[in-house]
Image (cartoon, rainbow, N blue to C red; front, side):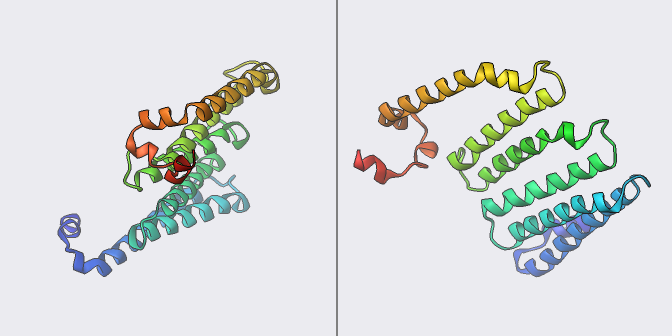
Length: 205
């Protein structure tokens, strides 16, 4: 009945809705603290306070995003801090058989997820500034995670010594192609993506 009442509540009751939202997020944070507190006596307060602070800060940004101005930046920061806080809590509670030293690349993956979701807040199907960064963070995070979990047996240093020159060569070729065939590439791209680039720069060419 309570859920139904909240769903049919009209916009003029926005102050009441904001209050309910605040209490809901407060309940989430209290539940998070209780989970953290009962994770085990071996969890030290000094270690567990940082995930709690990150989680609370993330909820603050998400609340500001939902109630005040819905900017992609607020959504990105809120999601990042909330995901960081939740995952850090799981690490300090020893739920996973790995330490932060092993699973730290997942923070890059969480950043990629937050960037992708924040890009949707712009109302576009593809945003160059958010989605491209999300792809880069995701790929880097997965690569580091493969090394961290020892799925790739060779050392990262050896891997970079072999692959590094090829990546530099490939990056240089991509930059040259982008410069030489910029107009053709922009015409082939969807409007949502091509509009991310400055029209003034095109006029100068």
